[in-house]
Length: 299
Image (cartoon, rainbow, N blue to C red; front, side, top):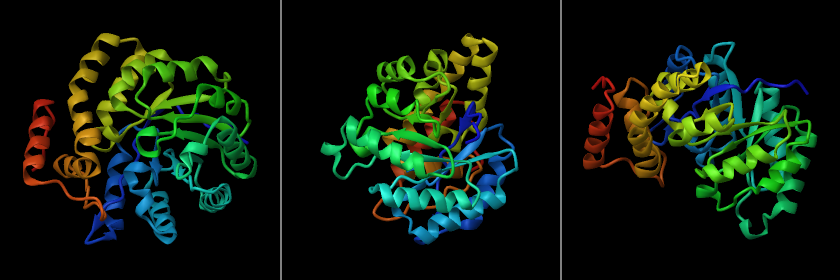
């Protein structure tokens, strides 16, 4: 399996909806705009893409749309984690055959109390053995209630078809444990923009960041400043972006992220039920947060 260079910034792209249906035209416009932002690639069918609300046919059509719209040098990583090992392998290979470069596989979570080290090592090993593209582990305990241990990551990092992971735990301590325990050819991407600077200085090779859906150039700039050793300027920009990131992730969620996209020249579209749209007072707060960060709104 060919090694993929994961260094850089990846937005986990949203799936725009209009009146409950996927807006492929909005999706195309977003990818065409992201093509020019300096990002390394995109994550399709992730948490911010409301993956759990999509039918299999919609998932295929979303990936096809992204493939068609993305520039040739953009890496396409697809979220393929399902609850069963069998379904994960099937979906991963279907999307591999469509041209995906790698798969981001979230931890199974419905039987979370049984997802110990032994179960997760077995699951990821079986998926990686059968997958036609490289696999990345995806740790996002705020959604799944499952936290991959450093021990499990250490074991899995030795698998030749498991090339890295996205850690969205938000714990710098756990991130450090991962970085201390992995094999040298295994890469870690931070999944929390608020921790980007710290994660990069610890040894992460990039980030999968919701914030990169609205200000990809700022995320890329922080990454590049760290590569250049300009930590002072990177810190200033990181601090300016922290309130923005908080607003479009934990505070207002995906509906807040989509509204911020609309304000900054992207096509956020609507969320799909049962998620609710932002309320007028929330929209006003998001607008104020973006303006305080000196971001230029288009409306």
